[in-house]
Length: 56
Image 1 (spheres, rainbow, N blue to C red):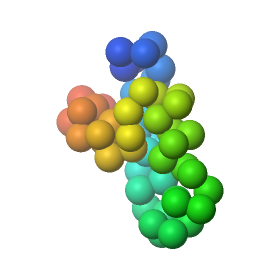
Image 2 (image 1 turned 180 degrees about the vertical axis):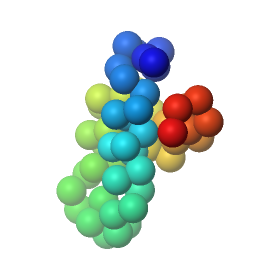
Image 3 (image 1 turned 60 degrees about the horizontal axis):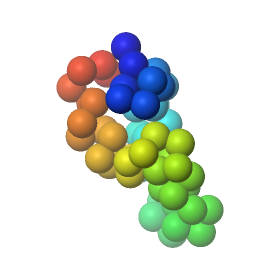
Image 4 (image 1 turned 180 degrees about the horizontal axis):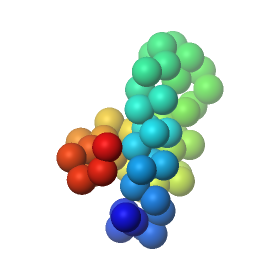
């Protein structure tokens, strides 16, 4: 299944959950959320909220 940007939802959810499981300071220092936003068009927590129920 694909998201609105044509990316695989399952892979996006895995990446988003991995980022959110990382300590906040590490996420911030590495700008992981910003990189995810550039790739998927939304923040990891938004992506999980939107697509988490469709494909786990």
